[in-house]
Image (tube, rainbow, N blue to C red; front, side):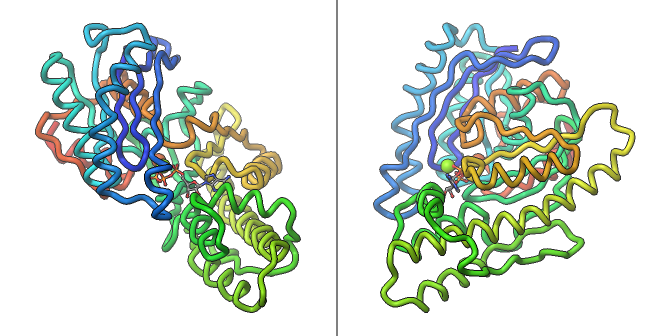
Length: 356
Ligand code: ATP
Ligand code: MG
Ligand code: FE
């Protein structure tokens, strides 16, 4: 199967052509991503209206470029996969409408893909990972621990009850006067900081449920910063290092419980269990180190796909479309509407609910 994927749910405009062979092996034939980071950075966050306009301007060219790089034309494509949620509604409309238009004019099926499903299935494209496995999605908009049972079969084991982890990084950076996006800036500053100077809260640690909470952390950072006058560069470094340490400790507890639950639920698994990380925060080296050692200690394989496939991209959307098609799941009606909210574990029910 050769699938054209389109991604416009947030601030990346992306198009990609991906191949899935009969054995389930994947190959990215052409992949282009245009980040709108510069357009938004002056505002310190993503501005939905600007994002939608930027998607309109760039998408056609990106699709042509992805096809050209793959050495394919629309005739060679078996289906179109476009992100239809969750995300910013303006951007979703642009991508989904474009996908529909191409599907209609080229006479190809359309798959309206859940963006989170794209993240969830990426490890099968990059590493050929077998089901079931656990996935930790940590991005600017999501913090979720998801059990991936199969294509279209997802169980959300944990989610943030307030801020997403990337959001916590971004807000902390803002409080400290560091540039947007905050994640890389906080990580850089943390390198020369003392992680033991401040003891920031480790919310929900010790609790049996698998949820996350990061908003208290941001408040603690604000209080720490306000308690020092004037705040020096070293203070900022210490706060960032302490912030990352609190996150490491929290994740160690939360994810550690998730790994235990997985082992209990799949005690007869024939292969090594695996944890996959996805989302922009997966770029964070401290986080990777934490997850790697946690996996080592629990006998899990730790998979971190290459960074450009952890952040938003269209290859994962094309791949999710390919997986759906290969699994015999129905394509979507051209009347399908984008959804700003769309929990991943509702994907299967939605398909059933639509009567297909
Ligand atoms: P979503 O995909 O959930 O809709 P998004 O587009 O904001 O949200 P991504 O593009 O996957 O998510 O990731 C961006 C987030 O990753 C930002 O919050 C950013 O601060 C964070 N991030 C990027 N690099 C790092 C890093 N090195 N350390 C920590 N966080 C980082
Ligand atoms: Mg993004
Ligand atoms: Fe994403």
